[in-house]
Length: 287
Image (cartoon, rainbow, N blue to C red):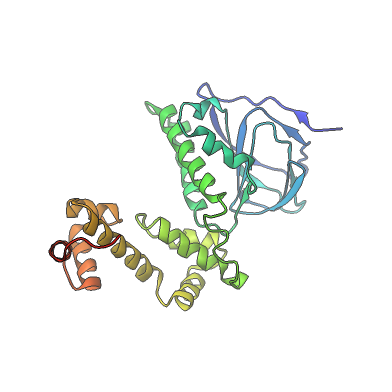
């Protein structure tokens, strides 16, 4: 018997997020829908048969299920899966000009992401915000939910791109890969608060282990590395734009202008204002 079609009931605006806690005697038949789904595993262990290919699942793993794709979840008997299921129709995102690009992640090579991928922290936070909007139903909540969905899809789309990090550590000891993934995350998300515990959890390391390995491989602590990335980005903005310094401070991840001045001067020996003046006096530089 082949996969069966199962109708999936969505909200009037075409998006729904549901909790699914499997019991020990839970059994699923292979099936498909005419909607898209993202499974985010919070706990338990098992596997997902997706388009005929089986993938192992564990905590902090995301699965992208495309419209019409046969799939089946298989639980480990003594530790069944606990997951959130984000389901949406193509119409829920079709108004967005890049919707085809975002949905292409569901038909790509990489449809199972994690564990150990720090960027999944942003996906998990987006799911939390959708849950809040669904339950609170504040004015405009469908708009808020659609915005969170687009943000989640963008994160997943970037994670499925082969050039976005998976080739970064080809010759590196597999035990060190989580550290390089964290480094890549900081390079791309320097403007966000440093979430050491979230990254350590996704890397399956304690915060102390992550800190020790990161320092051994980079020569810097996490905060020292993040500070260096932020300062380099600030220097680039100061050299190439006329943005107000308070805007530069905000753009690179600082909320306090005085703190930004202290960090920048400690790193460069100059205040941001003086740094810009000296670069202007020196004339244009090669890009």
